[in-house]
Image (cartoon, helix red, strand yellow):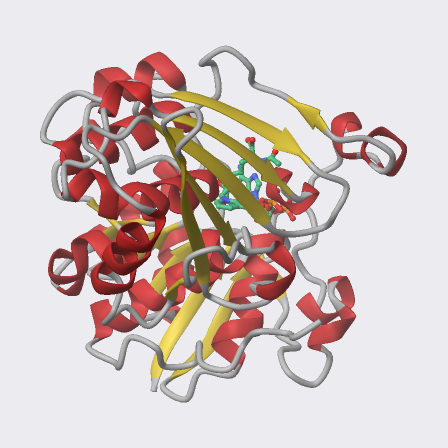
Length: 346
Ligand SMILES: NC(=O)C1=CN([C@@H]2O[C@H](COP(=O)(O)OP(=O)(O)OC[C@H]3O[C@@H](n4cnc5c(N)ncnc54)[C@H](OP(=O)(O)O)[C@@H]3O)[C@@H](O)[C@H]2O)C=CC1
Ligand SMILES: CC(=O)N[C@@H](CCC(=O)OP(=O)(O)O)C(=O)O
């Protein structure tokens, strides 16, 4: 049994990690952290965990946490993860970091979209943890940078088209809509019930959302040239789920049936990507609670655009489920272990 620490266990992705790790046959959770709720059982904060995980939350002292665990998940805000990750690595503990701190390869780009990086020397060795792109590198990583939720849905949606050179990379537009849990559990006016319940709104409009460089970094690697996209995130009055609608101009004549075949072939051996048959499109309802990414694709021949629609659960394939998938690769377990049968069918 591997001993696992969840740093940031009082947050939404922390809770989701505990839910998933609790049903994993090869690991046991030995340490859960919170600053504000230190000293309380984690099941006091989240009663669904009662009698499944009643560990006391403790403050995040890296040496204490490292001594209790063989692997650490950091489910902390960006800028906070990078304060503790080097100590875990120095103690010989691999880290799966759910924050944005190690996703960008270029420290200058990180500094431009976030704050200056505190340990840029770790960026070259951090592996961007999208298993469908980097499975082999993740297996031997010390530090896995778990992707953002919007990037996961968009990169998986576009991978077959870019890898086949079928679209003009300069034509990509992605509109993504997220449930409110994407904003985390800390109190913010923008996440209040009355602010979100009746509306559907765009935010981060005009190329300013910090996921833009992360998406562009990975799409550029797939395209083999620099990709600049138009990305607009939206907030939907639901608790979880992301639906991305992605548009691109084809470089050659192609039919919906050919694209459906391309997606089916690209993802044939992927346990968590479900390309849909031609004419079918996903819903967040059908991936809720699961580690699946569902993808539908079609050609709008009238406007000469390819339209891809992908759906994930932001807290599972967009965060904690993907993090457990990465842990499985890193530890040499079957990739799907603990993640099977998670979908809640509406
Ligand atoms: N929510 C989502 O859908 C996704 C989130 N992510 C990323 O994952 C990370 C966690 O997100 P999420 O769970 O939503 O966030 P939450 O705000 O829900 O939780 C944050 C956690 O971090 C702890 N924390 C906050 N500040 C510090 C600090 N300075 N030192 C130590 N612990 C601290 C909090 O503990 P305390 O009890 O003390 O407040 C809490 O446990 C973030 O980087 C986020 O961007 C990635 C993909 C999807
Ligand atoms: C709805 C909502 O607010 N979503 C968050 C994205 C959450 C996330 O996963 O971002 P990181 O992992 O990169 O921090 C946002 O737009 O900032």
